[in-house]
Amino acid sequence: MTAKKTNKLKILNDPIYGFITIPNSLIFDLIEHPYFQRLRRVSQMGLSYMVYPGAQHTRFQHAIGCMHLMQKAVRVLRFKGIFISDDEENAVYIAILLHDIGHGAFSHALEHSIVTNISHEDISLKFMETLNEEFGDKLSLAIQIFKGRYKRKFLHQLISSQLDMDRLDYLKRDSFYTGVSEGNINSERLITMLNVKDDCLVVEEKGIYSVEKFIVARRLMYWQVYLHKTGLVAENILVKVLKRAKELVAKGKIVPASSALKYFLENPVTNKNFTSEVLNTFSKLDDYDVLSAIKEWTNNNDKVLSLLSKALIDRKLFKIEIRNKEFDSQLIIDSKKEVLDTFQLSGDEIDYFFMTDSVSNQAYVSDKNQIRILYKNGSVKDIAEASDHLNLQALSMPVIKYFMCYPKSSI
Image 1: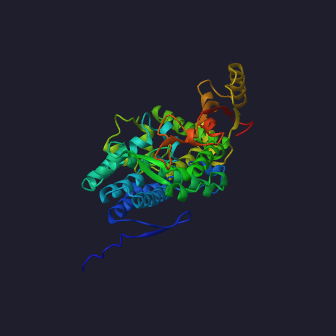
Image 2: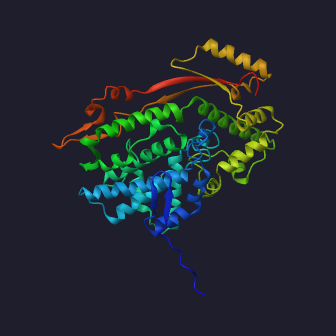
Image 3: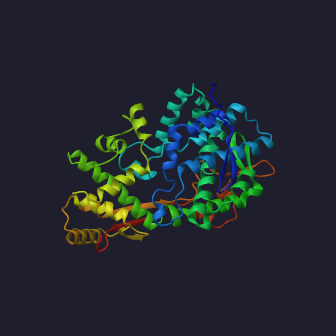
């Protein structure tokens, strides 16, 4: 009996863009790979669903959306006479598809708790290199472009810059799923206005207002969604929960967890010891492991772990105060003492219940990977210089806010 051939030229239906075509069998096989399928179980926006109930979409959806936008970008640039070979085309599709494959459970929270000194970009590269071996070096060019080492710089800029396919998808997608309409950008028009000048990605002059809207939308999405005060509290508590679990395991206490999560709780993992075995274990870790463990930890004998876990599971989150200036040191001391007394904590436990930190929002960085506007006479200007939008220079300045969070009168 002959094996049935799989149809690998699939069409997916996306709520943002409609039908998305998988361009070839290699990309189909990469999407089908367990490493990539894990992204179905990793939320795109971490714990933001605690603020915006609709924000339940995944890294999988985002990656597919980015690939779709890249297909549009390649078509537009070719139409404008920019030569992109078939190999380069396929490589940028693979690079953008896999750009976020290294994200851990609940996205950024794990980078600050169960692994140290290794970013999701580093892990994405490790996944790509492992897949390259598995797929007979068919990802080599994609990896070169991803790392910014390929001779044609604009291809890397399509994947990673201040106006890349990643940002064009996540702003539009996150705006859609949160219902925050201020973030809804016109990605179609932005892509249609793309061009290449001196091997750099540029936006044609008539697209200047779309770029302005994109930068303003990014700023608003950061304050309203990504750095929303309740989301900040939830993410900080999650980091503390995992830190406490790791601390208890180091002391020989029993902390129930899935085998994948257990490995990272028991072993210090850094960039230096992130071997292929560690990568394989990481590929089995997702939101489900973390959430089911936290549910279990609500009944743990350790007061700190159980209280923090209950705060997340029951959404009894901490109070947060945000200011434009740093908090007075005496205020921090007094507030800490109040929390210590109210919850009868020991000195080494207070850091789990009292947090101070800062967040920064810079919508546009004018001295790095500038968004360049191409004029009809062939000259090129940075958007901050080209725009007549009074706020654009201000948007290039980082805005820092300071926060302090601690439990309400009861958890």
